[in-house]
Image (cartoon, rainbow, N blue to C red; front, side, top):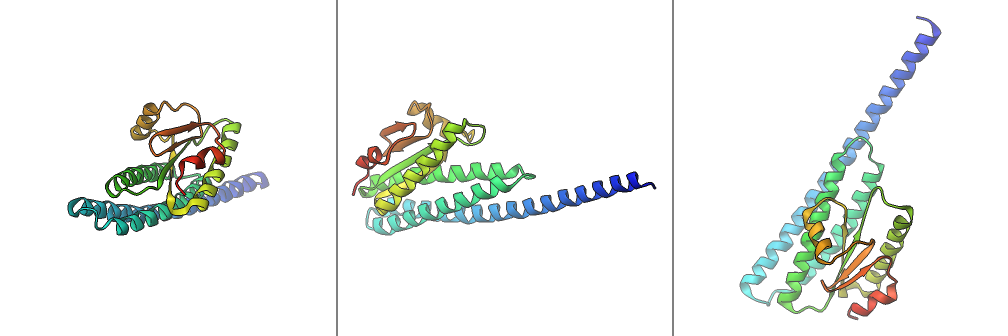
Length: 215
């Protein structure tokens, strides 16, 4: 075996080891994503059943349901950011994108849950839905997404329990999301829907949004 052949074999060997290590790392990340998502699904199911229970008994458990719903909102949002970071670092597992779509559905379920709880119990918090696109978007839209996300996080920090923040991916290829886009005639992103009535398309300043969030 000459020096060139040995070099080629060594290069291929190192490449294969790198691929195997990459796959192992991505499989670990995928396992962590699925583990966290399973925990989030349990939290959601617990909240959903609690509100079904309230529907049977009346409104005497509204305060407890509100606390549970708020805790769920905080946990699922933080977890979604963790999934996003892991997906960005993942190369070999396309299943990670499917896990993100499941997360989007959980957020959509949370939105429906917040609407129902608000109607049944008469709470005055604002449901703030944030719609943005991911993957293969113009650079200026990506910049606006980051700015809008920062604005909404600042708004959430300022108003706390008076605001439910619900981020949804507009191009997740989900019919539920597509129906929302059609219903509100949303064609420009990022977009914000407040209390299922007020729609803002394109980058929107904090001052324009907070008029619709109760103090």
